[in-house]
Image 1 (cartoon, rainbow, N blue to C red):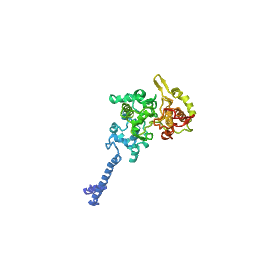
Image 2: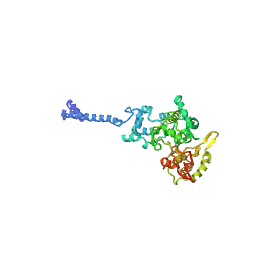
Image 3: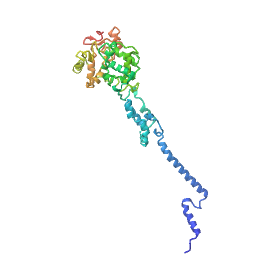
Image 4: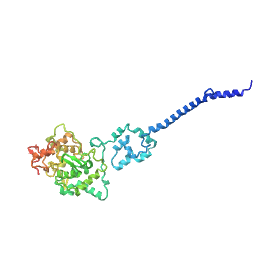
Length: 401
């Protein structure tokens, strides 16, 4: 066998390399173009690989360093924040958007944020927007008694609380009957559906049809003394109104201003299936109310203390009070009476017993014009008041002081 020719080996090597790098049969410029084209393809693919994660996380608030407080405007955190308790301690503990959550979320936080992100800016705005008609859906819990502050402000708040609970004692000069604020605003003004103070404070100033002008909260309190207490209005800026305002302010601390909270005021009670009836109301009163409020609506006393309030007669609220409206009384009674058994009366029973209670004599409306008929037409026509109506042969409002 002849030994291999070195020139043959060189040609074999060149042939093998032609598979990967071309051969001498391709001109040099064509090989250069192929190399440049291949490099361009790799550059495009590399840029795309880098850009994809950026595009996926461009709206990630954690990646962008968004402050924790801003997260309440995005997706699930907004819904959670709206449902959280409003007192500071509970909010700090339960908030899903606390600073620690924002900084410690890591990759899991980023994933959760991406999953919960709203579909559009419009959806974010809708989630964060206030409730329609200024009515909040967020429940509110007033502060506990043991959180009353110390110092001068705390002293004034405590003074207001005592006036609220014992109005005839601590605001005697302005009270003309046996009632206290707490008789209509139960549990020291805390109980929902009994016109709680935390639900009223943030709604003023407000226009009121009763006064036909914009009332401040101080105006509203003065009206309570004139009508519910059958007394006279304390002076603006005085100790009594200042203390009561401080108490209401403290109780409403943390509540949103300008929004009617669930449980504020009295519940909306539907009209009854049958018109309210005096005789049916008498039967309900005898069975459910007389034990505490007396057979003649005089209330119950223990010595000098009025344990349960009078519902009609000289020591009750006058014809100008909110409770003299059958509608208001029915709403209060159905939600709260008999005491500790609120809701046990049917809506029909509540309307009937309210009709009975508000068809009794009580002190004159302070706005009395000198004529029952004219006073009814001006102040009581169409609002469910029995003032100026004849019941059992008696014209209500005529024989009252």
